[in-house]
Length: 188
Image (cartoon, rainbow, N blue to C red; front, side):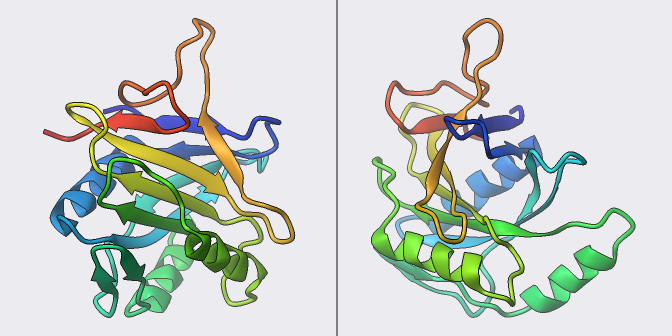
């Protein structure tokens, strides 16, 4: 599995999901089975502030609640965890949320975007443009569906599309279907 890079159409926002994060996300989704799940994304911005580099995805906090078509992320342990990440030699911090929908078609819900707007406006998060990753069940054999958005305060969410390299290939960690949804190769 390799890193996954994406950016908005206008290039104003970009994200880099490191390979270990993709592996963890795949494991968390597999463990959830037929229930929704989620957690937070921890990372930092590149020195030029052009790219959000996601270095960690947390499992769902212990006080999270979930069902087949709903998920409420808990908060248990997150404040202490984020404090430790902030004080570490290589400082990292909250950059967004991830969420798993146990279906083939990955569509963020109205509630998903409403939560992200609340986070973007919330002083306690201090994150004016949080990321939202929505993962789904595998769309190809050995691949998991993935869509990414940046949700700036005061703006509509913007989808992050996989970056294209000089050969014209999408920079993904697996084969991308020809729709808005991309995919990454799942752990085996």
